[in-house]
Length: 252
Ligand code: SAH
Image (cartoon, rainbow, N blue to C red; front, side):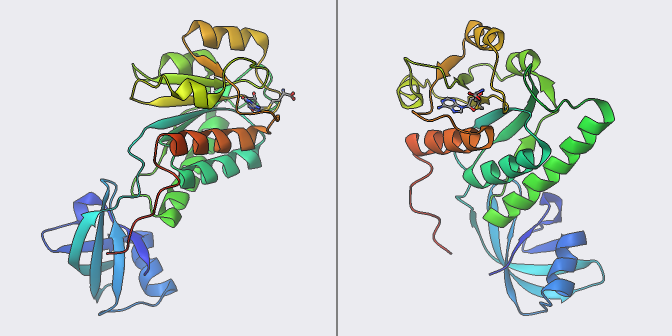
C-alpha cells in the first residue's frame, strides 16, 4: 500500500488531509482516486490506514479507517557526529543511517577534513541534507525525520550534547576497548557516535574527546571508510540494544 506523510494539524477526528506534494503525488503521479486505501503517517509515531474520499486541486481528503503506533521508530536516541566527508558521501551517510534508525546527525568540522563548509554554503548543504533525510524516512516508513544539525566544530558539538549522553568515539587505533564491550556499561539514555572524516581524527582531537568523557572504541579489526564506519557503528548499537535484528512491523 502507498504511504503518505500527513501533518499533525491536518488530522481531525476521523478524517485526514494530505496536502501539497503528498496530495499531488497521490493524485497526479500514482493516479489514485476515491475509494483507494492508503497509509499515512504523522511525525508523532502514529500511522493511519485511510480511504481516499475526495481529491481536490491541491489536497486529498481521506477517511481514517484505523490508527495505530507505527512501531518503526527505534526506542533509542542514537546521534551520529560525522566528520565532514566529501559531498556525495555525506548524502549516502544521511540516507543510509536514516534507514537504519539514527535520531540526528551533526556534521563536524575537524582538523583533517578535506571539505570545509562555512556560512551560506553550509546552510544550503544542511537544508539539502535535511530533505534527503525526509525522503529516506518516508521511504523506509519512519514517522520521525532525523534532524540534521548545523555544521559544528567538534568541541562545540560535543559540549552541546544532551546531558547524560554516552559518547563513543570510533578510533581505528584503539587497542583496548571494542564497541560491544563499551556498550555493556551503557547507563540508558542517548548515545552519540563520533566518526572521523576520511583522514581520521588527529591525536589532539582524540585527547579532547577522552577528556570530555568520551569512550574511545574500536569497531573491529579492519579500517573502515568514514561512510562505512557510521553505518556499521549505528547498526552494531541498534542490534546490540535490541532494535535491529528483530521481526519487523506486521501490517495492520
Ligand atoms: N586515518 C585513518 C582512517 C580513518 S577512517 C587512516 O587512513 O588510516 C575514518 C573514521 O572511521 C575514523 O576516524 C574512525 O572514526 C572510523 N573508523 C574506521 N575504522 C575504524 C575501526 N576499525 N575502529 C574504529 N573506528 C574506525
